[in-house]
Length: 214
Image (cartoon, rainbow, N blue to C red):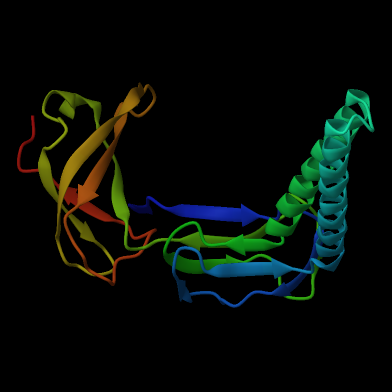
């Protein structure tokens, strides 16, 4: 069976209402494209407030440092100002992370398999939002007899013919499974495909042919 190397079910990192999902099932996208955007008004307001607090704390620290040079305030006041600035900066970082989580960006080039949520729906944190796959980076997963283990080495070439296309694909063994299934006496095999055929898709099944067999 053909399996996508890059595939993912992406979940929401926060609870909120979806306001935009530009891509529908089957639509292609590029790495970094926006897949979903959440209503971020509250988080953005919190970020703006924390940034203002940071600027205020920074100004206070600068003022106290200048006063300390003139012996008008003690080191304790400067230390308190520095601590308030550090706290304000930390809060800003937290709110910035929240704002960043309001957008789901594509981690790789691919296509939308399924939208598990829709615009204007509210979702909880951790709920799956969208399934994506990259059909341009596929590999072959097979189960082969364990008796073939003596000839199955990385680099061994074979052909794989998908049932859906009927066109043989050149492939080579990438790696073997870590254990033999005791009940079926089979071993999992992963193969690399030497093809740029744009019609290939994850989930296609087929038949493998090895020139060398025990």
